[in-house]
Image (cartoon, rainbow, N blue to C red; front, side, top):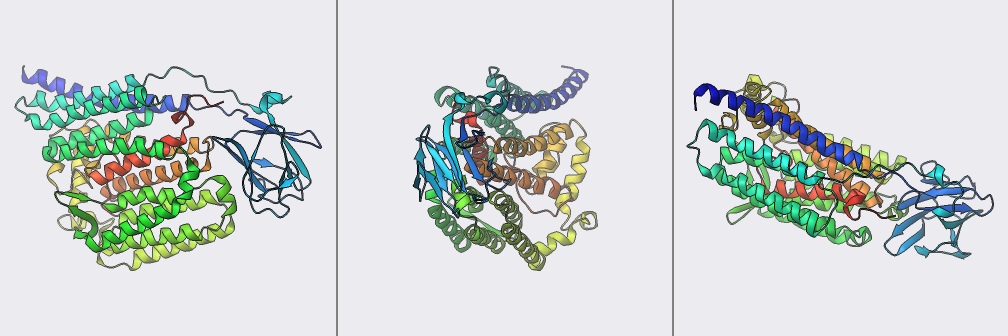
Length: 553
C-alpha cells in the first residue's frame, strides 16, 4: 500500500473516530431522555370535609403546611413538616415526623410507621384525608402528565458503535506499522468480549430494560484501556481485571440497594467499617509521591479512599421518613469531618476536595433548614483554613498554580508537557500510540486527559468530558422521579463525586486548577479508581425507575 493511500486512510480513521464519539454521546443521552417516565398519579388523598383531591405522584411524599412539602395542606393546626406518606414493597405507609398534634389513622394515634389501605383515613390537625385509588378521582386527567412514548430500545446498536470505535482505534496503529506487537491489541479485544458478556448478563439474564449508562461507561473505559495498551501493555491487563471487578460490583450494588430501608438500618456498621479502613490506611500505607494513600498487598496496591466513597454515600443517604425525623445532621457532619481529616493526614488533597463537595451536596439535599446551611458553611470555612495552613505538599501545589511555565522543568514539568502535547493533537489527534506524553510520569493516570487530547484529538476529549458531565444532568433529572429519597440523594452524590473529580483532573492538568493528582473516572489507569467509578455509576443507575422494572403502575 502506497504512502499516500496510508496517509489518507489514517486521516479518515481519525475523523471517523471523532464522529463516532459524538454519535455515541448523542444517541445514548437522547435515548435516556426519551425514555424517562412521565409523571402520573399513583393514588389520591381526598379531604373528607371539602372533597379536595391531592394527587400522589411519588413513592415518598411529605405532608404539611410548608410550601416545600409534596402535599401542601392549608391548615394552621398542621405542622410545617407533619407526616410522610410512602410506598414500600408491602404497600403504603404513613409516618409521623415529630408533629405537634400527631397523626391518626382510622382514629388511632400512631407512634411509628403504620401501613394504610384503601379507604383508610389519615387525620392531621383538623384535616382528615382518605386514601383512594387514582381511578376513583373525578379530575384525574388534570393530575397526570403525558407519559413519554415508549420506543423499543436497541442497546445492542449503541454497544456496536462503541465496539466499532475501539476496533478502528486499534486498527490505526497496525495500519501505520504492521509490525505492532500483538500485546497491545490483545487487551482491547479481550475488553470487547468482556463488554458484550456484560451486555448479555444485564439484558438477557438480569433482564434490565436499559443499557445507556453502561454503554457510556464501557466507552470511557475502552478509551482509557486503548491508550494504556499502547503506552504500557503490562498495565493493560491489570486495568482489564479492574474493569471486570467494577462491572461485577456495579451489578451487586444495584441488587444490594433494592431495599433502602435495610441500608438505613446498617448505616452504623458502614460507618465503623469506613473508619477502620481509614485507620488501617494511616497505619500501614506507604508514602508515594507525597501522598500516603496506597496499601501494598503482594504485587497489588489498593487505595482505600476510593472504596470509602461508596460508604460515604451509604451513610449520607436516607429515606424521606427518616430525613423528616432526623433533621439534625450532626452525625453525618462528624463522619464527614473524620473522612476529610484522615484524607488530609494522608496528604490526599484532591480526594479530600471531592469528599467535601459531596458533603455539601448531601447536606443540602437532606435538609434546607437554616441550621444545616450554617453548619455546612462553617465546615467550608474550616476546610479552606486547613487547605491554606497545610504544609509543603499543598503549598507547593498552590505555589506553581498559574505559573507552570515559570517552573517548566520543576514543579510545572507535567502540566507544561500536557499543555504542549495536547495542543499538538489538534481536533483529531496524532494517532493512537504516536503521542509523546505517554513517556511522562503518570501519563496514563493523573495526566490521561492530555493523552486523549494528543492521540485522539480535542473532539474525543471534549466528548469524554461531556459524558461525565451528563451523568450529573441525568442524576438530577431522575432525582424527582426516584421511588425513594434514598436513590435521589445517592445518585446526585455519586454524580457529584464523578463530575467534580473529573473537573479536578481536567482543570488540574491544564493549570486552571492546582494539580491534585486525581484520576479521570473510568479512563485513568488505576484499579481502585476504576472499581469505585463503576460502583458510583450503580447509584445513578438505581435512581432510574426502569432499572428495577419496566412498568410499575
